[in-house]
Image (tube, rainbow, N blue to C red; front, top):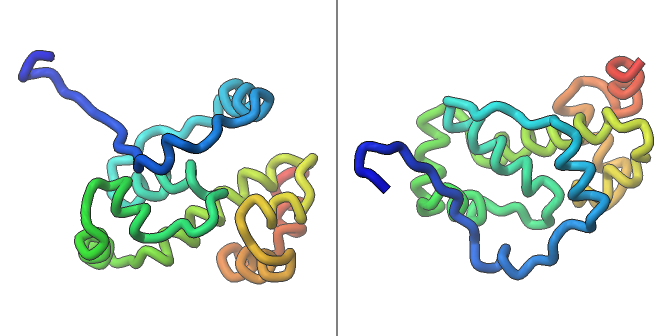
Length: 146
């Protein structure tokens, strides 16, 4: 590589390398959906975009996020504070985004979405969604999926 060329990389935790691959049909659906988001210039937006890939993981901790950013937990906390937010807010926004994408699929039941996002029960998920969106997931689905 030449010194003047721009480069980028993706850092993965070693533990992620041991995870099984997506089932073939899920990988094919993801690859063919074309719902790729453009890269964001804002750090918080970029972090949300990266976390979106992990939204279905249980225990999406700040330690994991810091590792994905190749920084310490405390440095990530400071950077987020400088930008006027906290990790819990970023995580809530990311989970809401993931939920709204799943709600776009009429074949996915509320129970499926609840389980995939790691909520203990449907009512907990509904309360979370209403707190962020101002409406229940059912109303959101009706309004945005005609």
